[in-house]
Length: 308
Length: 233
Image (cartoon, rainbow over all chains, first blue to last red):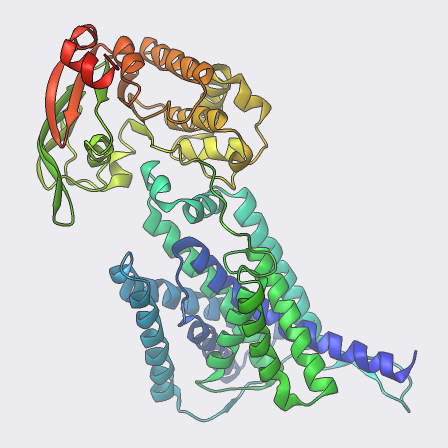
């Protein structure tokens, strides 16, 4: 294989890795938007808190002398998911439910306020500096001759792909097959009608926040290990990127969020690989502007069609 | 079965119902007729608790539901076929029906499904089709089927004939009669006054937020005032 091709493959692998994580976070934006039509701008912070919780769990286990990797990962994952889910649930109760049904700007402002609050809370509680995140999963497969460019596929990347795949499959099955999943879809199509069928729509709304937050926590642990360090602003850019991914794929559409995440990840890594790392945010947000200008419903979103 | 006692309902500061009283007895078909904007839908929705009546009382089987939350009211033996059908467009026919029987056990759902498919064989044929792709008449059948899934003792229908072809309307009214024969109490709102009153045991005429008249369906049909205003002379 030519060197150029190998280089391209490397960028593709990197892009898909980061894109899978974006997709996991984007699910939270898209599900909440699909159900109550608001952008939960505190979602990036939920993801950041997931990463911090995972780190605290890992550190705690290390102090206790627990080093068996699968156990460490599992405990960190479960802790992160529980804490983030509770946060997601609480944020909805405290900041969104009281203002639901008001003018669209009010929940939006409330969300931005919640985001600032959570960021600063973590600043105070954990300090504002970067904290190293143990990578835990080391090593990689290498392809290509040692003298020339080598494609490296690290074990952490493989972990990210597989975990994302499992989460997405589980989510799809849940949404399409389970009773609650069906109710989620019904509520997102006609909330008022669902309550006329006796369904407690508040519980369904809470459920979407909890699910979105749990997936963000998974991404928090994975990307924490991948990047190797976290800080209280960790969720800010990632949150914006995932939001972009959700809009790119079509906000409200779950497959759209998955596709949008992957496209965005690949676009970013190609930019870093062929232009310069400094341009990758420019590319992401240019994509956001372009999609809003030319296809506001996103790649897989559909315009509302009502039959009277 | 249902007693609406002197309710007032507001949308913000605007009062839409000015002291409305309606009674629906067990096993009856009661029709509510009235012009556009008279408050028919508001009355039905007040029964469902959305919006809630700001004064007066609503009793369902003797229980005061005036201030109960919508979801709770709709779980106590009452079901609605709302104006404009409001089927879930992205869900299949079968999924829509499942949503109607959300709180029932699997075996109850199975039984209700069979019953609904018996009433509307058309829905069985379309079982796996998305509701949003069906015709208006089929969607209306689905909306009625969905309401029946919870095995209600009382069903509220808001303009079930709106925008449908005469042949479908006839079919829908036939089904409504059939529901009464099964022992379900029916509260029907219609602009199609002739058919609604012919079928009804009793009828109410709502005019700008007040009940103008109530009588048996037959008497209302014969009433010259009603003939003039609602039945085209």
